[in-house]
Image 1 (cartoon, rainbow, N blue to C red):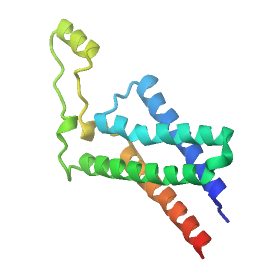
Image 2 (cartoon, helix red, strand yellow; image 1 turned 180 degrees about the vertical axis):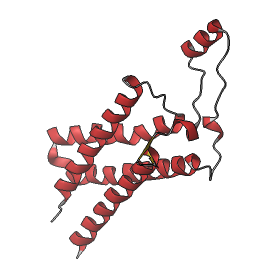
Image 3 (spheres, one colour; image 1 turned 30 degrees about the vertical axis):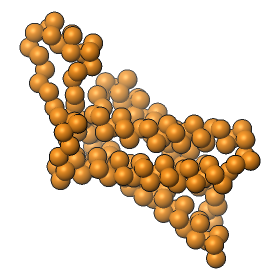
Length: 156
């Protein structure tokens, strides 16, 4: 059966994979992330950082495991909000689309100043018809459920 260390390792491996995949999409395949896509990465970065610290110092495993649970809750909230925005259920003004300037000089300046914003509903890639933000939501729910079941099992 699953134990805390196995769940910990699964979450760490999934976080590394998720960040690697997001960076691959952005820098290799040139898919520009929206602002919420970037926000969704923050809990993953923190999970990876705390997970790597724990690998070298296992003394505080229970605290790191609790931090993982809290970061997964944050990821669940961000990815849930992102998914609702993607489906148009919630309007989020932080990811408004902009029109590309017709003049090449203006386009160059907009790119250099990072003033082009990608619309959340357009930026979200789909795999098998499901937006990637929804996959994040589902995986976060799954991992949070594993942590809760593990805690319940230890309590009883």
